Length: 311
Image 1 (cartoon, one colour):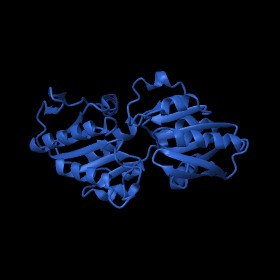
Image 2 (cartoon, rainbow, N blue to C red):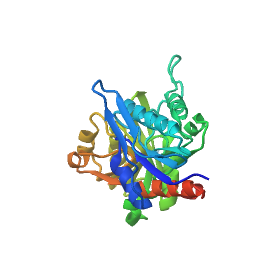
Image 3 (tube, rainbow, N blue to C red):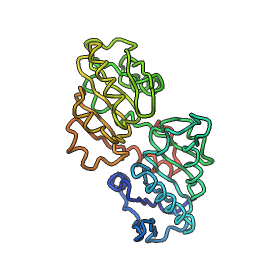
Image 4 (tube, one colour):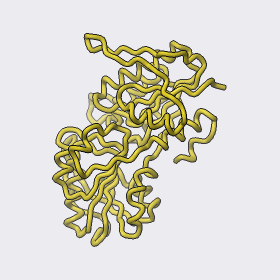
């Protein structure tokens, strides 16, 4: 049996950690997260965690390498402070798109990051919508991969009966099908060809979108080139309106400009990655929170209840 529940956070998404604590009715355990003058991370846990059940909230979003290193240092500090159990809560798992060898001399970065976290001291991992489900097998500890679909569905529940759910490519069909099943909507697929990283060409739609409200469902919106091109194809095929929803709004490079200039009515993402000032820059962006989902998973893990009920 573990001791008290303790929640800590690094600097990558403190507002999400605070929201999780509010759902759990607890306070964040204080920790010093600063930089030395040469840029190295300085971490110090400010109170005793001996024997406690500790959860560290830290998505490894941009700056990815800094946030990953900060997370590893926090895990190591907790391990050396004799925490009873250490769970890394990583709402957005960076490097997840590098989950296999795509060329003869390429690394499998997602596996290496898993090894980092295990070596640093993680006894368990909680994450949201891994880009590739098999990454769970890269860890030698339990991994709870939660699904944000129940949160992402909320803005679309009033449109039931008019919606067709669209996968932006063949690889996302399972995700889109699950989404469509929950909202009792038909499914369509965009046939896509990827020429190089962060660049793809949408060709045509498999399925009927004519006269419907099309909702493009993906796990990540990065540069937004793929999803914006898909939206134009859907309009060309007769869709009445086009929405997009994705768990992780990476939104790098020209993404915000592309979304502002796109044909989307609304683009819904979660707060696994902090939105910061992006809501002011992009009027089409809407953020929904996964705080309650993560809080329930933390509560169930701490009390020894089933986490699978959240799937």
